[in-house]
Length: 494
Ligand code: SF4
Image (cartoon, rainbow, N blue to C red; front, side):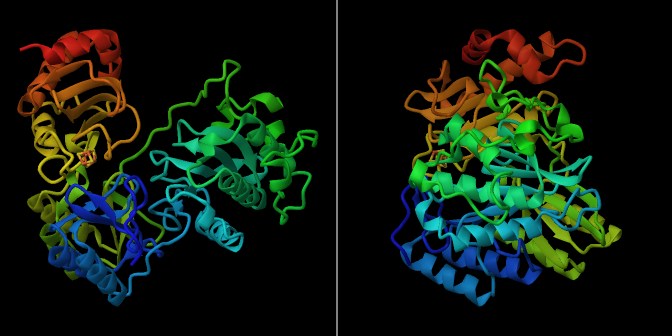
């Protein structure tokens, strides 16, 4: 077993990370899914060696906490005995229904495999930080839009057939667009981006690439043979900008995202507006909860409230799924599991069992709108009881928690459950539960309440929204109208 990872690194099975409640491991099966028996076995290992809680993260990784150095080693051995091959190297992720969804534009798995192999052949993983990742999204009903990545390839239907839109650094809405290319070019550019990031060192991400590097990425491909990657080193990651423009730079004709602001000019090829700001159309993201018809059979998506569940409940649910004939269980983004191979009657039966065990079976469940880390007392760094606060807010404010709102409840300023910006963030600190409006957990709060009383502060904001909301107005829009100062004042008021 390797030395323990530093905080913020990626806690693989071979390198658990220290947290407030012991060691944490995160694992993703190479095959994407697990058999029912493997998931039951994992749950039993979590009960034996961890704190009895299992988690599925917003990216769709499985986490087990509360381990010691010795028990983490035993867990790793048991995972091996269960025959679960765990992903190592640079994550090249595909959607949870990859290859199974009739609405998918293209099966992303072959391209993902080619990128994985190219990164491995180039021995880039050792030179990269553990959180550098690639997403290959074949489209369809469950996209990867909500998940951030250094490189994003998204299948598009274009006049020239299926092509791949290439973007860097962000989620489906915030990533910087480069353009749209054929599969071979997409593979080459993805690997070239990863190589450029590696050139910048282990702390680097694609967001650290310069505009000049992004421009050169778009322009070299039509010049170079498809199978030859650019040698970046001599120019320190920058390629001579005098190459003729590739189809990316010229802007391929594509369907839906053709409306995205990719300029035909080199200087705007990154998808930036003239003012430099990234401008993207909002991309609706469907929750992987509910029943999805597949090319063969169907999948039932079930969520873990706030991403965690007692291992015992997960074992019970999976045992029921096994008796109903589930063939595979896939980990899915947004803290969900997809059970495959079920009949319509079996889906219904498993849904009922999931409700009884406390899982989320309705995408409109208000708990899906709240990101909450384990907080106090599970995590030693936690200053507020995040999950209790979240449960109270969800139970009392269902009407306010619409899809426009991101509410983040963080035990401390680290913000593990939602590293990005949220409309409202409650963050634990020395002064109790602070409120951050339109910011991250590490921002300076604009108002405080005692931790035990934080839900009441959100109740005050919710009451004002109910009163002020215009017909058809979303919660986020109403919050904007109330203004950050007004919202902070509502939170503080007794
Ligand atoms: S954000 Fe939550 S889980 Fe992360 S360190 Fe702070 S309290 Fe612990």
